[in-house]
Image (cartoon, rainbow, N blue to C red; front, side, top):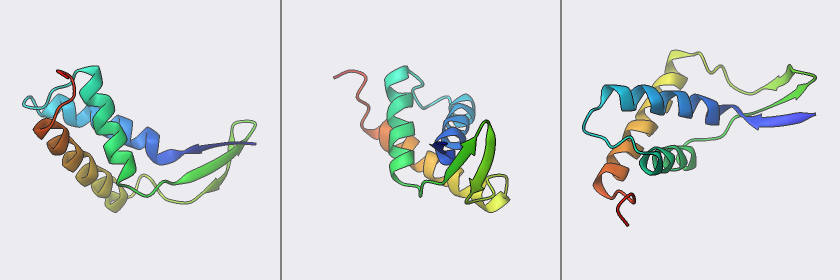
Length: 90
C-alpha cells in the first residue's frame, strides 16, 4: 500500500496559482520551493493510502471551501515571508 500527503499536492497547486496572480513575488525555483516547504510546515498534513490506485483512506475533503481557504491563507503567509527574506541571491 502506498501513502502520500494529500496536502502537498494541493499546496503545490495553490502556490502556482498564487504566483501567477502576484507579480511582486519572485517565482524562481528557489523561492517557489521555499514557499512550498514553508507552507507545508505550517499546515496539518493529510495522508491517504492507496491500493492499486484506489484511495482507501481519505482524512479530509480537500475540495471544501474552508480547506481551500486554509491552504490559500498559509500559502499567502509563506509567500510574504519568502518575499521578505529570499534565498535566491545567497
